[in-house]
Amino acid sequence: MTNTTTLLATLLTAIQQGDEGAFRELYEQTKSRVFNTALSYVHSREDAEEITQDVYIEVFRSASGFRGESAGLTWLYRLTVTKSLDFLKHKKRQKRFAFLTSLFDRDTGEVLHHPTDFFHPGIALEQQETAATLFRAIDTLPDKQKTAYILTRVEGLSNTEAAQVMAITVGAVESLLTRATENLKKQLASFYKNRLNP
Amino acid sequence: MEPNEEEKWINAVLGSANGLQRAEPSPFLFAKIRHRLAPARPVYVSTRAVWLASVSFVVLIVVNWRVAMQPVAPVRTTDAGLTSIVSDMQLYPVNNQPYSLWSAQNY
Image (cartoon, rainbow over all chains, first blue to last red):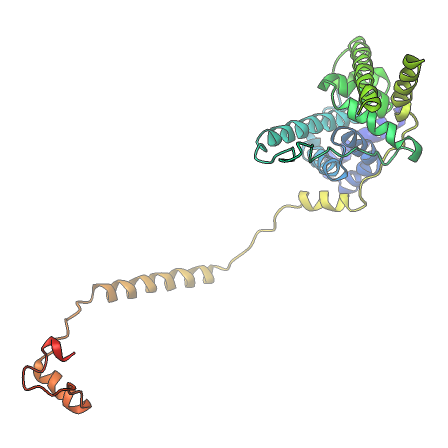
């Protein structure tokens, strides 16, 4: 990560001076990290691409405000997490006003709109179904636990890196991860029971 | 036996994100970002065109104003005039009664 950090610092300095080539290079170097993190939150390629666009536009516009107190990658992850959580909040607010559509069939009372399972494109085919269940359980976590879990378990950052992104201590990340895992186990246990008695 | 199966399943689900490959965004995404970053191109209009448009607008208003303010004299129709039209166009009442030509019952 050190090489990447140095490269990103150089690229961000060039972007501050209006270098478009450096912006392209920064995009190529980091696009999969940004897109993948957003995808873990929103579970839709289109929405994740929209967030990715917003992140890079913010990077380009506020590159001059980047002082280098944090590593470039940390800054990018922080922007992605913030934008993804904002996107989810906005979506939730929109859903609150969608009360005119009935979720249930008028005659049979059956649920009409089942939320579709999210199949992550980067997961092996044989793992897709279990991973979809995992992402459904991650969705139920509170925002901080969800972020800590996604950054460390899905994105593969170390606890220290996740702590820098979340601007908290490493101890706090560990505590969030412990609680997240406990909550996930409880949620998965209830999914398991539903599987046996649908 | 049952709790063991459940635990196994939970652990399998928790471990399903291991070895995840990062997904790539669409190859056209950077073009979309550049398009959003490109400033809107300003539209330049020559000073002559602006003056021409302004003058046309003023002329239009003045002409309309003059037309609106022109006193409209009511067209006076006389019986003699109507009678000549009736005779020219042979618009006689069907029953040709000797009473007033313009009484309502002739229509």
